[in-house]
Length: 356
Image (cartoon, rainbow, N blue to C red; front, side):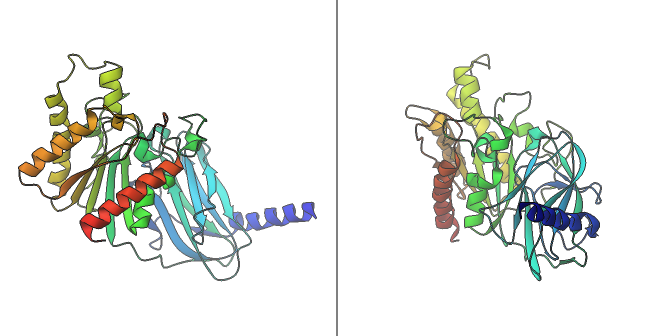
């Protein structure tokens, strides 16, 4: 019986390889996020949380990817079952990944999301393969609400699926779909752009570029000269969660010399937020911090954020506020349960401010 079951699975999976090819430029595919369409036949996904979704018929589905480094992971959700993703661990180069077989007749839905981020490289999407007789259907309607997140490893979801006592930096444990950012967007029925990079700061990062260098890129793969078109997609809400790495690198590691004053730290943060304000004059901006040790008792960093926001409010900007995710005492990156708690806090905050 086990042999027959395994053989059946292989036959069904084989349908995906020998069936109907769906090209990446098919108008029925719905893309979300900063995706590089320089070549419509090979769009590149690099930012965490970028996604592709659609509706289809047929008994099987396979996804074709060409991964630059062989380090990226993707979730594939079938028929809205968000608790049970098929996880693709992409190999380097072009490969087809069977993700569903034996599906019942009728319409089905898929959602592909990038778990990892730009530090794992980019991935070229090369299309789908459906079972014989399958076809792509019109996509679901686009969400009317839009939220953009600017952040670091917390926003990316670094180590969120690791056990509490487990490693804190494995790419296999990184799942942006279960970050506070993505959870909040789903709770508010909003489309999200996740502009984040593990290790990044406002004044200094663990690498030679900072968020003010990085925030306007189309590609998330390192510091590069690609340019995102900010007129292509406009958020009603922007969440900024930065300064955790600045705290470590400035206060603990002493990487900046001379040591910046409190006023210089506040000014650096305010300058970046003002860049975002200039891009999105009507958005409500939430200047968040946490929930790692930048917000622990005695830390000055929440005060820097509040002071920058107070200064902008005093200058007439009334569509901006602060939100601190509380320190839980956990020493590593937030795990999923902490992301869920932070998402609940942020969701309530946005509902209050926006009337959502």
